[in-house]
Length: 273
Image (cartoon, rainbow, N blue to C red):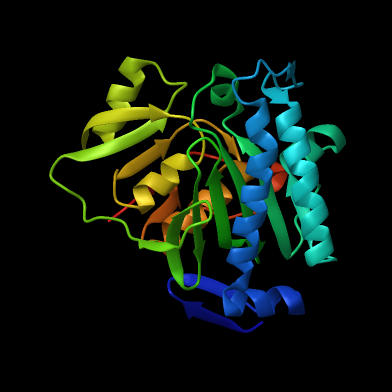
């Protein structure tokens, strides 16, 4: 199979023709950004509105906002790019995770950071990513509460406010006083030790894949994760961060790959310059 390097992202020629065309022209992330922002509009009426919370089998929460946003995303992707398979969080919860990955597929988290969303916090996001041959090659992260969207593809990483023009973003060179972003689920003493392990004197706790995006735009430096995550939690953010010049590495110092058994990630670290 033909492979080429473009702006640090590996593009493999196994993608469907219409998808390949849109990927190469840059139209794909424009389409995904519009779709993620449409899903954001579905989610926002439920935010801080005492939406009913359902506990899933894994004890994580889900709301109607998650489910309605996912239905919108899946319907539109099927219409725009028929025949491309999708792995989406709520569909997997209902029907089970696929036994194996297709060569080319979508990874979708319609509302990443549901716990924070339920608390009324702002750190939740819509994540849509494209995986080809185990590598994430394009992705979009939208933050409904703040009206911001980030995209990453072969042409680089960009950010915009909903309805406004794109602005390029780039990771910063690592400063003497590096800053870490960590999961809100960590206790303070655990977080202190984890941040110090990666040379960071201070840290901020945050929900969702927005951590990848804040590193991509040069505001933070490292996001280490020791606990398990699903692939839809990380794919879109990884696309943005890699396109901005950053890295997401597993414990073997290899780029975090996709389509793994159970669509689960082990420990990883996301970093900027």
